[in-house]
Image (cartoon, rainbow, N blue to C red):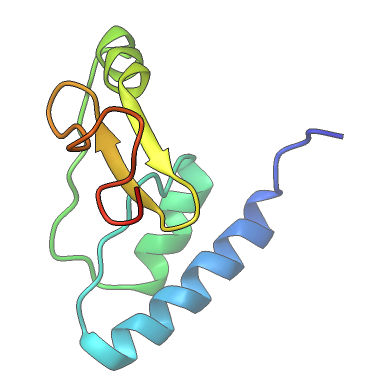
Length: 96
């Protein structure tokens, strides 16, 4: 249906994963979470956070960066046409 995942389900999944990672490394970084006030409150209640960084990037800049991004799906390697292009245009550096 294209609906968003409910906050409570998303929070449960993310926090469970962070608990697992923290138990192993005591270090973690979240990118793109939290996105709502309720998610932020749940994160704040569950963990003692050392630092929070919010990057305020203009929409046009995000679109421009994404426009040049390429991903080799089988390997997950990513390239950027301007900053980190493949050695041969249209070919993966390792598998061709």
